[in-house]
Length: 292
Image (tube, rainbow, N blue to C red):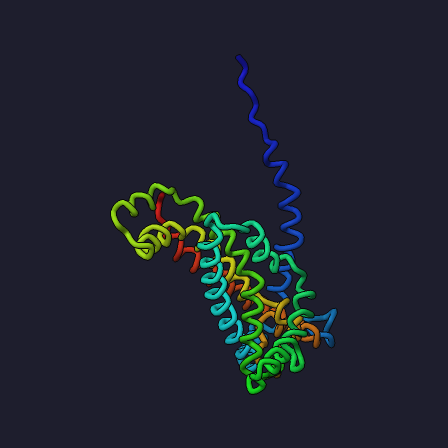
């Protein structure tokens, strides 16, 4: 019987996806990397010259850039912790068979599908000096606690962190729910027969077996936190002053001012930070995954 020729159909399927990825991802990355080593700006738009690592040196000398790095790490760390903890706690409740579970899941998930622009308008009206939150505080006799939450130093970054947590905790909740539902009930039944408490079950069964879901949640959260732009831009645009300035908004503003080479260097630094930290966190949690 003649031997059948091996089909190359799967390779043809990959070609369109590879072309799209190359044109819209690989090529811009290469261009940014090349431009980061030039003095490309609005004055030398068509005749950029190679200047080595001068752009990187200038960035590392800029106190605003260094401040944006600190804010980026603060935002990424705080939002990752909050979104992970809140998402996990919600999942522990929503995985149980309780009345209205479907509606409650939908409510918790809804914020992550709302337009960023809508979220910005909503929370600007809530957190403004004469916004809903301050009006409620005044109505219940707590006028001393009123504040311009998005326009004051110290509270602006905290407010944006809480808004980000509100948006994405429900998304993490569903990832954790899928992980919790994959844990065999036999483990919990055996632990109950052995007299294990609820905390012991959580510590010795749930947490070790939920690590694969934790890996996904933490990796996505840390990567999203490090490259955050949209929520900062619509709520504070990096202000007040530079209190909420992050790497992405710094790069955007630098590009808008015509410092094209420096903004490219900032993008490269941001990309390197995201890749290194995301890869490290992914490896850390992957090594702690337990076979069911």
